[in-house]
Length: 271
Image (tube, rainbow, N blue to C red):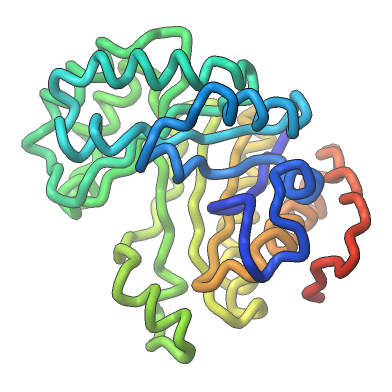
């Protein structure tokens, strides 16, 4: 029984340590957002594997050349090269993450279905959509995803947008983050959640309570969830991720606790 928790990045100027090895002592997963902008070098990926234990998990975003420029059409060379480089991570790859642009709506479902059928079958995949049409009528997309055992990744921003921003970080995020509904239906045995809270940790914790119950229910069903905690400035994200794990474990005592992180000069503290 595993619950993976993590953040949007493993390095942040506000954190005491900004290397992957130390981050992997705090969290057990990370969003691979940087791969959206460029495929890293084989040496970099080998270093990622060396710095993380076998149980650590990466959710790796496909390059924008595939999802945003080619819009899933004729991208086989880019996908092949990307996966060849990432193969060095082995079992650490939780899923390849297909984040579609907001302009990709339900009319593109035939293109998406064909794209998913052509992907290598030995990997897991997860998709994030942002067109409201998919949420108004989720059935057709769910059918396409279930056919290929692909997970639908929700980005829950409902708590963040529940009230006006109160800080510079919140005001900046207000203009950049998508207004996404809360969706808690798992399509596979490996659901992935992205949750955006507020600057105030208490508001973030209060807002994630439905996800604590959902994650606990998934674990009891035999699923293996991965949960990523975001805040507007992400300063407290690693501590919050561990707090989320502990709250789920309070409901599911058989879940193993996270390992204690190695001491650093100025440990991250929050509560």
